[in-house]
Every structure is written in C-alpha cells, then in structure tokens.
Length: 203
Image (cartoon, rainbow, N blue to C red; front, side, top):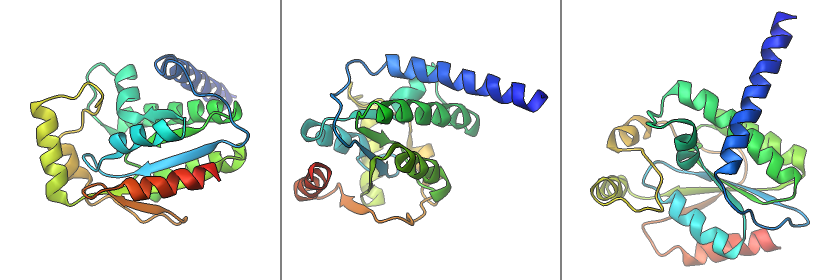
C-alpha cells in the first residue's frame, strides 16, 4: 500500500512537471496521420540544437530541448543525476502526450547511453510513432571551440548551459545504438543529410 501511494505521488509529480514543460513550448505544430519520434544523440557542442531547428523548418515537430526544459524546472541547472532523475521522466510524459495527439516530436538531448534511449524506443512503439535516430558528431576540437564561443557570446536561441567541464565528463559515455540510426557530421555541410532525413520522415 505504501509503495502504491508513493508511486501515485511520483506519477502526479511527473504530470505536474510535464504540465510546466508543455506550457513553456508555446504553439505546437499540427497533428499528422502518423507522427515521428526523432531521437537526437550527441555530446554538448555537437550541433544537436541547430540541427533540430533546421529540421523542424521542413518537418514541423515539437522540439523537446532538454537544456531549455531543464531551465524550466531549475533556475540554475547543474546537470546532476538528481536533476536528470526528475527531468527526463517528465519529458517522456510530455512526449507521450504529444505523440498521442499525433504531434511529431524531436527529442533534443545527449541520449548517449542505450539505457537512456530504451524508454524512448518503448514510447515510440506504444504510440505507434515512426522512430528515427540521428547521431550528431563533430571533431572534439570543434566541439570544444563551439562551447568556448558559446560562453563568450550567448546565442539567444541556444538554451544549453553545458560547458567544457560537462563535455569532458560526458565524452566517454557514448554507446552505439542497437537500432538503425543515421549519422550527421555537423563540421561538414550537412544539407544532404538533412534532405535524406526529411525525405524519410515525409515518406
């Protein structure tokens, strides 16, 4: 009985967090016949958020940017495990809501470990959504340079608070997905890759 009550309280807290996250999104794209869940994978500075913005210009979707959403729940984010344990379950609750309304979703987070991606795989299957996994990468020196420039001149569209220390801490965490995935090198011209992904989503 105690565990059941605790589980209900936890579910209620996650729904309240998801309400706050959804309120921060603003207007949402229109529903489609079969929505997609696009999972982006990449270290800080790999170009995920820029790629996500370019993608939704051509395939309208709700971007669930973990950095922006983290700032909704935490005024001064620290990227700790405790923060993640609250943030990502709420993001999944929100993603499920959107997919059930047939709104496409782009999940913009590092998603480096397969154990972190598994819940999203299950979510896509349960929602009947098309699953597309995209790994964004760049040479490590390029990612370091991007983060240094980000700290020096903040782009208002860039909500990330990850810095060089976070990059160094995460650089060895990447695990190859066990599902088919696409790779985009953001240090190169990625327009052809974007064309292919948009064609896949629209097919």
